Image 1 (cartoon, rainbow, N blue to C red):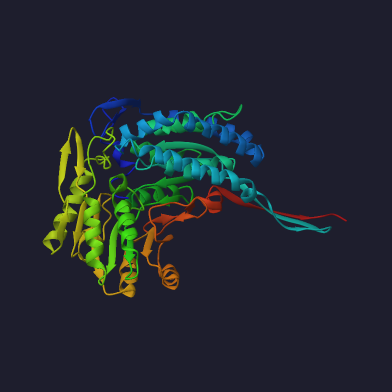
Image 2: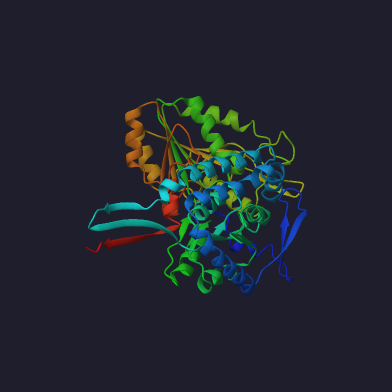
Amino acid sequence: MVDRLPLGDLLATIDSMKTLKNVNPYSGQVIAAYPVESISQVGHKITRLRKAQVEWGALSVGERVGLVRDGLAYFNENRERIAADISAQMGRPLSQAPGELNGLFERAEYLLTIAEQTLATEIIEQSDAFYRGIEHVPLGTIFVISPWNYPLLVTVNSVVPALLAGNTVLLKHSSLTPGIGAHFENAFCRLGELVPLLQHIVVDHDTTGRIIEELPIDHVVFTGSVGGGRQILNHCAKKFITPQLELGGKDGALVARDADLDLAAETLVDGAMFNSGQSCCGIERVYVDESVAQPFIEKCETLLQGYRPGDPAVAETNLGPLARPQSAELMLAQIADAVAKGAKILTGGQAFTQACGRFLQPTLIVDVDETMAVMREENFGPIMPVQTVAGVEEGIRRINDSDYGLTSVIFTNDEALAQRFARRMETGTVFVNRCDYLDPALPWTGVKNSGCGSALSRYGFYGVTRRKAVHHKKSR
């Protein structure tokens, strides 16, 4: 997840008075200012969280389900305000922001429905001689470090299962979207008579590391870059904490010769361009069978010409500014490297500024290969490189030839081929005839440099609990 370090990006936005200025990426206006907290202030919050956790963890799972559901009502009651905040803080077109709220409710509702069954004690034996069982016990206080690109969706993946399992949460949202972290505190700080169950903090880079190493937190969930993940892992190693890390991808798609080309082009262009390409599972590489390459590429080019970059507040805008303006330089460098090595730009390829917002034109590049950075390094932007392949075997090999392993995609109507593709893929998720979607019933996980641990599904609960074995030999 290039250029979305929830650690390092603080440094550029915190002034000498230790105030975080939240800036609209399109207008350049300061939206709000937040005082940066000290390690002692955070320590006081953690002390309160740990105290509240004892009583919260003692409730039944069913009681917690009801209270978390009550907390989620805040997001429904404040839909318009939250959607406006997402757009203003990270630049997504306002017309698209409500979709993230809908996704929050979809994921939360599924987790609510499976919580009691998933967290129930697993009884191995209950006889006259023995009781043997496995309990799923809350870890305690969990430190969630959340990114800006999907400030609701990524955060709900961790916060809801953590609370349902009986934990309390310390939440550090990205410095680009601190207001969204404040919304989570508004929703979940008090549930019933219990407070505080979730505390949002604004801290700098050094303090983030010190929190992990010095303060009594019990688990860390981090979403960000590979470099940021390594830093988190180093901090956690000081306390033998195994963090959950979601570190992005260089997601590849294969368009087979029997694919529905209209569906493939429409889905993959959206997967590459939505949110200005700032998606961890966005499409960053496309491999297409040479027999259908030309019509597929023509369809993609037509679709890309329909994008309207501009003011996120305008209804017609469907591509917002880059949340971090400096990200454009990385993307332009990848494009220049590709062109220098023989690639051809069919559309886009240039950066421009509107108001104070930095944009990259929706970009389609062909005649690419693996010697080019655009095919190997994550860019986190609206770039769609397309490479032709001789067939399925070459496509599988090229998709797997990556340091990342978050998702992979195939478009085909051949069920046997789809199953073979799925078996061969070295990714946490395999999509067939769709992409860029998190099913809350399936684990969201990565391999290689895409991270470790799982969010969503029942496995998301297992990551925020530990197993306690109860072995009772009954007296005669």
